[in-house]
Image 1 (tube, rainbow, N blue to C red):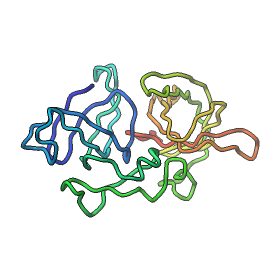
Image 2: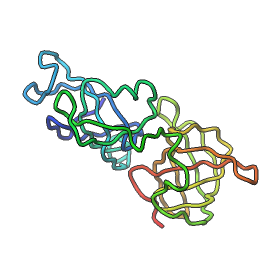
Image 3: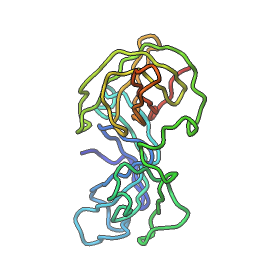
Image 4: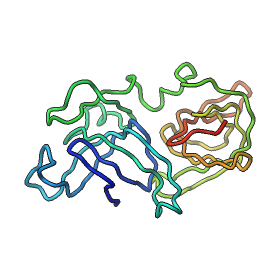
Length: 214
């Protein structure tokens, strides 16, 4: 449960207490004013699928427990068929419009979360800098932090990192990454867990809502 910060017929801004990222689909139920609706004009609640377009990391102590402020685009009454087959898909806005006249979406690069972490798709060059960090894993309900470990980065950029790990974490799960050395805490999504040539597993992370202060 949360409150809208602002809303239009085509999207909204709100705060959430669970992690998410740009490209994810969320299902919203809200008492939308009927003149702003594209469908379900006689229903008490407006139920609309929405695409996360931007994310801002918040301080939960200052934001009354909220973790993120997000902007979403309304995309219709039903999700794309590919979402039902693979909920790990990420999407982006398409040039066309949906049947309801809202934003249409297409699969982002045609890949699921587990496939988009290969090195040649990184947005920035990674620097081989060993930084001591603490990794905290959100539980499956994405409400609380479940497990943690102290580890070291293998490489890092402003937008992501590879860290040595003993945790079994599947792609698409969210973690908190913090460093006493840098005095920083960021939210990240796991893109892959790979075994290195030295036999030590690595987590490949992409930061969400903020950048690492290199």
